[in-house]
Image (cartoon, rainbow, N blue to C red; front, side, top):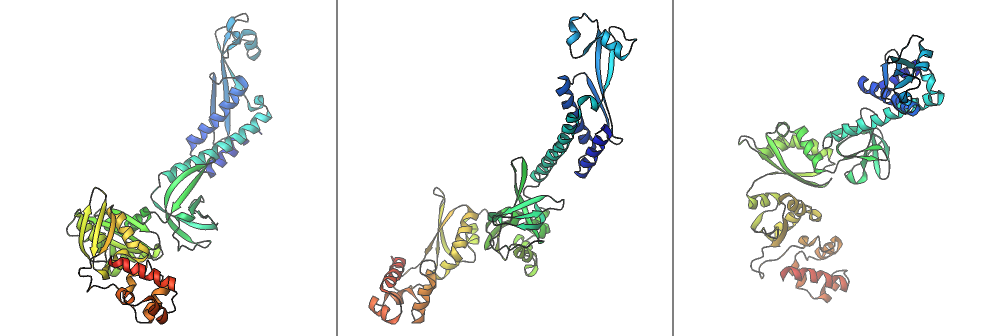
Length: 413
């Protein structure tokens, strides 16, 4: 393989990989200098001239002429007078010899090794460029096309043909992908695994929801509305605290839009995730009240030392505060940064009663349905009957009745 073919093939390969000219020249020079060091032990007295457009390469070795009997004759930058005169008969001691080295002088094996090294260096550089590109994009939304669906991850291709991944735990549980789908997600992190960049996306991160608000709500993008905090149960529910420094702008209204027009596209992107937009305030009592919406709070007691808050509500508001599967209270706790404990404000125990629907988290649905089937829809109506009478009127077993009564009694203790 001659010089022109080697350089031209490398230049074409580098252009395909979008490697710029100065970088390409630097890689070529690095590889040739490595070849020189292997053959001559040093490259200090060598000049390399590369013209990538024409495929030209010149390697020049410079040495000072010394007497044949000189002690310096073995130095890398010295040449004996007799050796120099083989190159040019007119040379004299003290002059400098410029000798051109060709690729043939290195041997065929060295040239083939150089070609492989050039290709490998470009591939390594390509990996590094990809790593740096996506490292700068961490926290930003990108789009990719699904090309392979695996059990632990979904692989996508970005606009430039790079492979990116959404692991199972970074997917919304309701996500269902098909090959060819366009998927949006944020760049969560970039890792080097066995020398290869691994780009990991996320659709469950709170940052993804924040970026969606920026893309759908101009006031958020322009900085007129600030997103203070985002907490999520991906695909189920989210709470977003927003604040505006301009009194003329209603941050909640702006984020929701006319008849929910702005938030609707975000909800659809997140597989119908229920999003509560809350007006942020430094008044902690009011902030907690808003965080537990739609439940209406009667009173609040905050213990700042233990980072806990006790919230008292009327019995019919408790299930609203807790939410389905405890989602509402869990997200509210994360939003305000305090552990929230919910208490029923019963007042006069003799007059107060509790609807059986309030116990959905503690008693199985089919048991509650059986009690309601025979007209028992409050806690006290169940406790007023003996175990035998409950057994006769329902199809419940003795052990189940005992467990139900135990739960209901705890409510009034």
